[in-house]
Amino acid sequence: MSTLQHPATGASGPATVTEATTTLRDPQARSSRASRRAERKAERHVDGRKPKRSGLLTAVMIVFVVYSFAPLFYLLVNSTKTQASLLSTFGLWFGGKFNLWQNIVDTLTYNDGIFVQWLGNTLLYVVVGAGGATLLATIAGYGMAKFQFPGRRAVFAVVLGAIAVPGTALAVPTFLLFSQFGLTNTPWAIILPSLISPFGMYLIWTYAVDAIPAELLEAARMDGAGEFRIFFTIALRLLAPGVVTVLLFAVVATWNNYFLPLIMLSDPKWYPLTVGLNQWNAQATGSGAEPIYNLVVTGSLLTIIPIVVAFLFLQRFWQSGLAAGSVKA
Amino acid sequence: MSTLEARAAGATAPAVPPRRRARPRGRYTGWLFVGPFVVVLVAMLIVPIGYALWLSLFRDQLIGGNQFVWFANYVQLFQDAKFWSGLGRVAVFLVVQVPIMLGLALVAALALDSARLWGTSFFRIAVFLPYAVPGVVAALIWGFIYGNQFGLTGTANHALGIDLLQPFSPDWVLTSIGNVVTWEFLGYNMLIFYAALRTVPGELYEAAELDGAGPMRTVFSIKLPALRGPMVIATIFSIIGSFQLFNEPNLLKTLAPNVIGSAFTPNMYAYSLSFSGQQFNYSATVAIVMGVITAVIAYVVQVRGTREENR
Image (cartoon, rainbow over all chains, first blue to last red; front, side):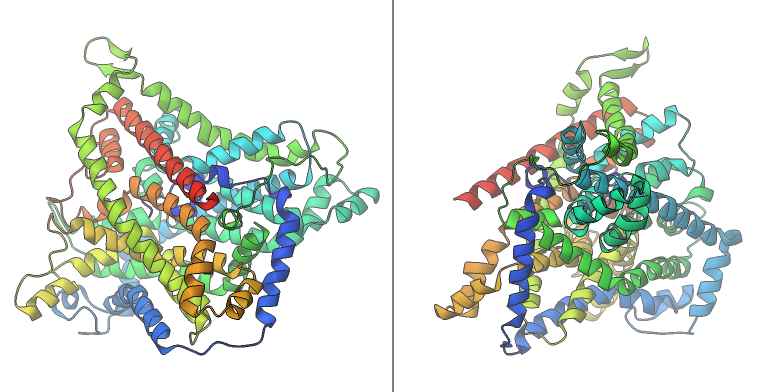
């Protein structure tokens, strides 16, 4: 539902697994339950009998797919049209001259290639913001799972509280704070708030409890390996599926971030794609209107392609990560 | 996501178990790993909240400048009709859109889990895909579709000969926004429910079958109870999302400037107070009050959901 894609809590709406306070528990307490459940789940697939296929249920799902795809199809179709035929031809089918390639060229070169600049900014925010958030969450999740230390309970409490804070409540205060430090209208204004992902940390923590056997760590310590060496050479590899899941959702949250950059940035040269596209769209109305709908449509298509491709390619990872997370819980 | 199933399983565990699994060398070694995360968390979360609280107690006055006014901003807010009408609007949105979206997601998840579909994995990824589309782009696409310039409603109305579809009329605009939000998050919620259904132990189904339970009976007696926890969580997310509603109305505002005002939702109000009105103190007050209201309602849902589960 999101509305604000405040990266603080990792995302827009649902991804911000917010306010689950009393439902989040120390993962250590559950590991034995998790393995039992995993066994049961395996049994279920062994039982061998396949229920009969249902035409009705398949038809219901086809309706869902049509609903999900129709707007994307609309986008694809209309990105092949010129500004003129956008207005004159039927929306759900191709019409007029096939103008996709020209639209792409125009999108990339309009206004001295500002779109490319926005794409670069988005990549910067994603790589540093989502990447940094994942790194911090992974290291901390591992620390929570495998070490006892004074203050661990307090960290647990703060993380639960953090998951419960609605992101939007933070955006305006963060802006006000950043403007005190002169950080607004700089990339830092987007990157710094993107760096926290309490839920990602919680997920890694849950994952690390079972994924990394304590004996392995003991053995490495006996061999005289330092703690950080153990983390980077042994733990990180075992945590990989969980890390991919956290990374992917952090990337989506950052790539799709709109509210925070809208607030923080006033100079178009720092805009991410989302804010830039909306500016192009708004350009069609008001005084001195110069509608460039064909570019907005094509730009929208170009914006979603990388993220959709990432989801499709990493499907196996994030779905197994989700499943692993759910089994472990 | 793991939380959901924790709830589903009704996991009850002490907050921190006494056992120790690994013995690091120093007592404070763990802080080397957790420290950086905590520092960033405090700087980006706790400090802004504290700053907002602080700001909400001040007011920029024509005479006397920035003055400490105790709770005057809060008093003003509780008498602010603009704020309440925005809050009422998101509450209506919440009560209508959330059940529809979660209901549809539930149907889709049950269909996926029934193992009676052709191409389950295709359906799973296909319905989930809109989640990957940025909210901005989703609102732009639907805005185009709604528009009568090159959208589909114009075409449809023309074909019907009457102006049946008016997505941007005052009566329909909330529905139009609800549709965009439903489109974006249907698949996400479906996947959450589906993941929870996959963790239902197989022997439960076998036992049900032995007892002669049909598929519908299995759904009502086993699957739906198993989904109560995830349902509570999904409801809570949706409440938070609804109260924070900003992107979709703010984007559609361009297309329907007369219907969607600057205080259409509380979040849009906070935004316009800050950036058009320069009323930062009052804007911080709105942010805090919304945060508290959201947290309270989410907490009530949580407690209620848990209580019913334990019955």
